[in-house]
Length: 119
Figure 1: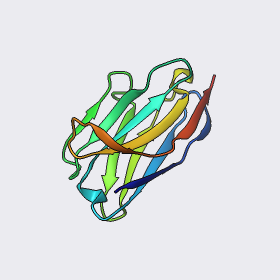
Figure 2: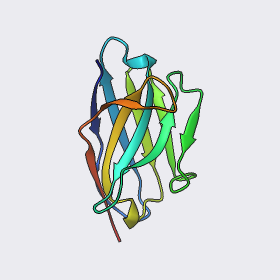
Figure 3: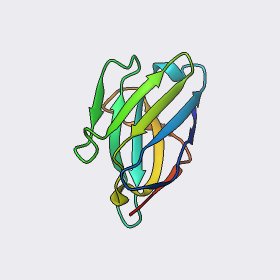
């Protein structure tokens, strides 16, 4: 069992930056691949970035490539999403999730944190 808690969301102006954190707990939390997702109103959930358990492999959606960076600190059991050059269309609820493999499926989910980007 893995528990995930996101933090770091909020209101930011377009062009600004935010860093989201996902704190994981559970006996085997560091052995899981992790992903960041978002869901905007009226849209389907989108996988933005994923990272292997070691941090050695990462993948990004085209919509965020070059602007967002995923990383993890297995000592702190925390995964991060650094978001730069934010746009109003990045407004969404952001969630982290854990999977046994980088390609998924994702078995455990956090509750989400709201990110709002004003123009």
